[in-house]
Length: 247
Ligand SMILES: Nc1ncnc2c1ncn2[C@@H]1O[C@H](COP(=O)(O)OP(=O)(O)O)[C@@H](O)[C@H]1O
Ligand SMILES: Cc1ncsc1CCOP(=O)(O)O
Image (tube, rainbow, N blue to C red; front, side):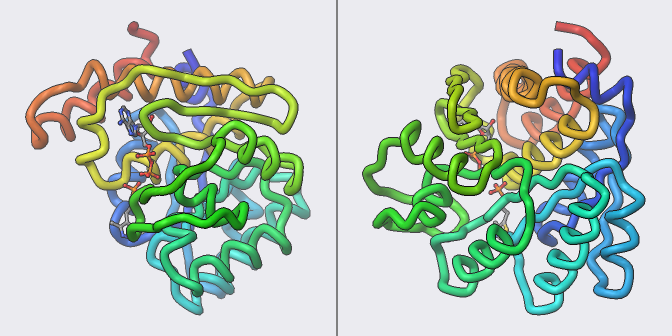
């Protein structure tokens, strides 16, 4: 029960994220007992990161200002060994996103990349038919590519989809289950990245605890199954329920 650990620790998670999911991300973090703070101004990003327990960098609605803020916050987090989760939303969709993704990976020490298969393909330089922020279409060996990326950037990698995979470049674990209804709720991947940041701030064993978090998240979507409006509400209820230690 990974969500339960976060609920006990109540970490402060600094999120530089996209405007589509900012509110949902804040509510999801609150549901599991974490404290969200969204701060993307150049003048405060570094200071806020240094006072937080984890940092989330999400490029979903990127612009020139937020790139500066992400690099400032990331450098500040690196100096204090504060864990960073990077969500390269739509990395293969435009050159701007791909260039920024590479800049972030080259300039910062990232603890975890959480992405979908299309974003993994973009990072690895594999030919892929991107479709905006969705995973798109193409052929790649997810496990092999995720391990390669984990080794190259010396970080954990989580690739989500019908099945999730987590690797540290040596170990690899697959997580199955959940419900595809979750793909109709915008921000499900972005919120998961934020919860991963909360997990990294709260855990003793990152690999195992993140794998358990992926299981919890899939369980929440199975338990929440309903028509879409009710699904949104049920999903947050389930996160709270699991974080409180119910099964
Ligand atoms: N077809 C599917 N069936 C069940 N769960 C899914 C499916 N696709 C994605 N998920 C789940 O949705 C959540 C978000 O993953 P994903 O949709 O891949 O992220 P993103 O929004 O970044 O593309 C994860 O918990 C993942 O396991
Ligand atoms: C629709 C959209 N456009 C830019 S960011 C975003 C949200 C993506 O969220 P997720 O990939 O987690 O569903």
